[in-house]
Amino acid sequence: MTTRSGSSQFDAISLDRLHERRSEKWATHPADVLPAFVAEMDFDLAAPVRDAIDEAVARGDVGYAHSAELPAAFAYFARDRFAWDVDEAEIFAVPDVMAGVAEALHILSPPEARVVINPPVYPPFYDVIPHEGRTIAAAPLAQDKSGRWSLDFDALERAFASGARAYLLCSPHNPVGRVWTQAELREVIALCERYGVALVSDESHAPLTMPGVAFTPAPSVSGELPCVALWSASKAFNIAGLKCAVIGASSGNIRDKLRARLKSRPDEIESRIGHLGVIATIAAFRHGAPWLDSLREYLDGNRRLLGDLLQEKIPQARYVPPEATYLAWLDCTRLAIDGDPAQRFLERGRVALEPGRKFGPFADRFVRLNMGTSRALLREIVTRMAAALR
Image 1 (cartoon, rainbow, N blue to C red):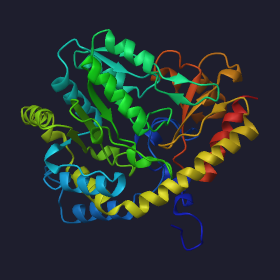
Image 2: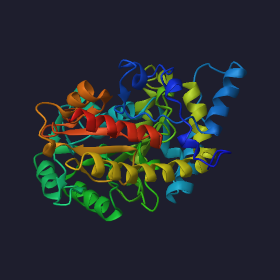
Image 3: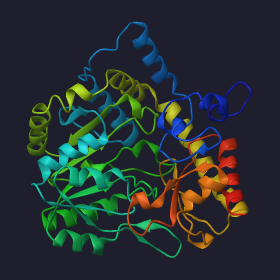
Image 4: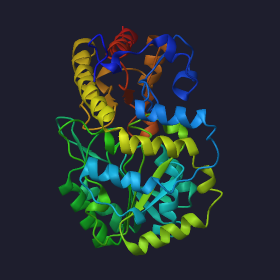
């Protein structure tokens, strides 16, 4: 989609207007810092989402959430986007993905159970597991000579064999951007079945696969394995602050346990779902496809541009273009920076990136860069990073 001038709608970003935002991304640092850290895009809202919110506010419709229409909207989106026929009866609303993960861990694992994760991985995983009375078992991702990341099935099997009861999978993976293939997921499921490990799949970045990359929802291939998955419009449509996600189970038995668990916690679940979040999410799932496809095309261009910019200005940085998300995972080892690379880029380049150490041990030489912005600002981000190294 283009503006009247012929340029992409996603290039029409004003830095002055972005500085008027009061979200975490734009309020954390001083105005001279260009933020590229937290997973929040700079683009305007999709028109169907913006219109739905505007209309709700105009009619004073800002009361308590009513999510009855949400399962059908997600089922429509799943059929359209993933060619997956999901049973609406298996879908429930939750305030956000991590709230759903917490509830899934409670129904799929006993207290003090070991829960497997794949570092480097989304930082809240390190918080929610111990907070819910479980312990972390790490099965780090593997990386080949080209830099491509993959699941280490030997490490997974060792972690499962050590007594793990649940596996918290990031699919697509944040921060490395891998989209697990159907073959990889089937191997995961076979291992889970062999060792009696339940699967929890965080699929919040699923709508953000790059063009030509297929995404497989874990419950669509999990068979009889106890499996719960989480989805949201928050990342793809940039509405994380509106507090709404959906959770689904792969089988009737798990679905009934999930329903009972959610119904037993109205103060933690129902009352914390945002009404505007439900309205915006339904609009995104039912009417946001054209905007989403334009966004994916634009992000595909950004990931290629980022590779060119890094090769030109910071060739020592190692970058593997992601298969999904608007996040880039950069290996700064060869830059020979003393201390945290993110701190160096912040202090000397006035650009804020996410420190790799937040994503787990042995990632302190990495940074995560948010490229969900205009081409002009992406160029400025890399220019500032290069200046920080001089």
